[in-house]
View 1 (spheres, rainbow, N blue to C red):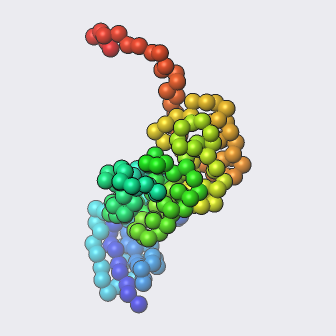
View 2: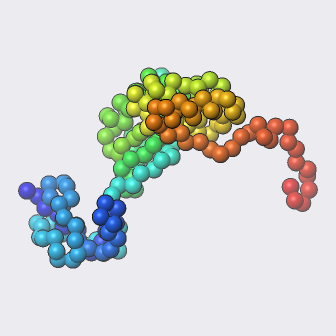
View 3: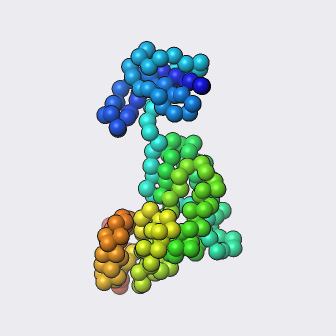
Length: 204
């Protein structure tokens, strides 16, 4: 049995409501005990964590990993699933939700399943794909939300593009509610600015 003792860190444990300095004992890679200084036992190795934060892995609900399925060279030069997961893990984030505004977008069960498999192979942080609300992120026709949920989507969004058609948006919301899935969206409607102008002035 390998034991590691982390001492003196600020421990934030939502499960117990703890937010105070203390010690944390790890046995065989799993947390075995949390308590005040000197209360959790000894270990072969001890690390002084004074001034550091000890907490469960963080979750980021909105990341952009530009790698996409069924495409040639695209936006993955900006961020791949592997590089994004590595950065997340290095920063203490154990789960990230990847937005679907890739090229092409994640708007089908096949695309979501591909994404889930790539994330599984990377195996650093949990990367959960967010599926599109509408086909092609075009805001016109609802995507097959149930099929994407079954393929592994964690939520739905047309991130970066609004769904200006109220009837389409209502369809999406009703279907998402029916299958018990969240919808993530920007609170904006570009149609409200159509035909808008601005004057050249000191206040413009």
